[in-house]
Image 1 (cartoon, one colour):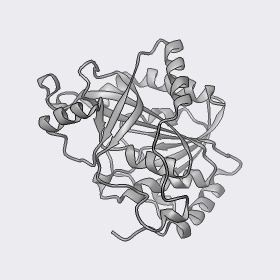
Image 2 (cartoon, helix red, strand yellow):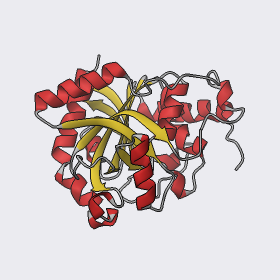
Image 3 (spheres, one colour):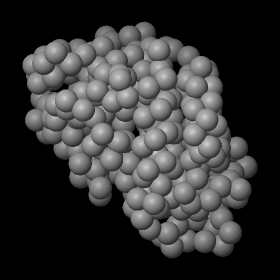
Image 4 (cartoon, helix red, strand yellow):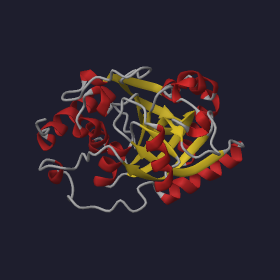
Length: 277
């Protein structure tokens, strides 16, 4: 797949969004995964821009993903939420997945909150639990910073030590404790999908130290860290991964689990955002 002309395209995409945002100047970006879009419905004075209206961006085809930016005020802070995301299994390249992250950075976003729905590898996790990402294993086989174009945005070589910001994780843990919302913390493993993992793969991932698994996030986080954005990752467990406890991951309805936990998820995200400096 031909490399995107990032250095050429990003300024034009950013200019279009700046005009659409008016006086809004978001500093916090939020990517909302499957079933987690209702957070964006709480954004006040919202400017709403479908992905496909932004030059050089792809539309979302994933189930339950509205596929739009929602920018405005949430919990007293200026935010830019992605109500849905782009995935590799939709046919998007790694750089197409990363493009909206680099675009938010171009607009002045400094902190990125990534969220997703995951399967649990850790047998102590249950559907409906929340899990903070401490680290991740990128098993997509892809990296959005490969190629010549990303090198024009920031240094090609950069550290992925603590990709999920330690101070932001501390803030999230303290917020969850105050809200009396139980919160695990573990290692996330990302794959390309769309097929679910085999039981043998899940056993292997557990040996590697993975606690949760899904089909998103890693490429977005790599892109964010590439340009120096701070990142916080939060997952909702919507099923047990294949073979965990003898289960098939399709035995649970992910959207039903997300709907049942919608209130606590919105409270948690809103309070985390409100407590950010």
